[in-house]
Amino acid sequence: ADFFRMTYGPTGPFNAKPFEGSRSWAGARPELRLIAYDANGVAAHLGLLRRFIKIGAIDQLVGELGLYGVRPDLEGLGIGHSVHAMLPVLRELAVPFAFGTVRPALQKHIERFGRYGPVTILSGIRVSSTLPEARLDKPPTRIDDALVIVLPIGRSISDWPAGTVIDRNGP
Image (cartoon, rainbow, N blue to C red; front, side, top):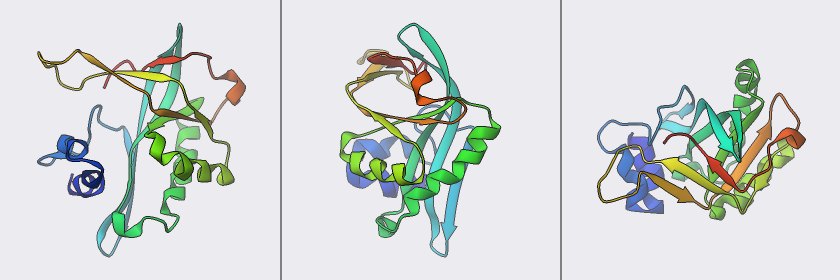
């Protein structure tokens, strides 16, 4: 939780809010985590959750990657490429695709992953997510215009369903 508050806080106080106290997930709790440590504690983190997302009328199984972060003092050192350490786990879990979303400001950062394996960045796709906690003052879902990241694991990227809206079927 401290790592996420420190890593996400500089991008805006709202981004650190889900990690108040000892909570180390923002919506759905990850099924697996990749955590890198050094002498100063947690250096990087990536979470994985198998789920079905709906693209148009298609329910698609994915390994959703999220809760990605690198400690600010280590940014720019290539640690982000450790995401590829998760690929054998994704293959073992037999998911056809890894899926994630990022802010458009991270596009160049994500494009660098392409040097280490096939990564497809999709823009112009709206992603609908259920809010993790019901609130009377907000609608039950939110719509993000984030960049969608797809890594083919067990199938070709040509098998990725077409559509302009993805329903994440949960937080």
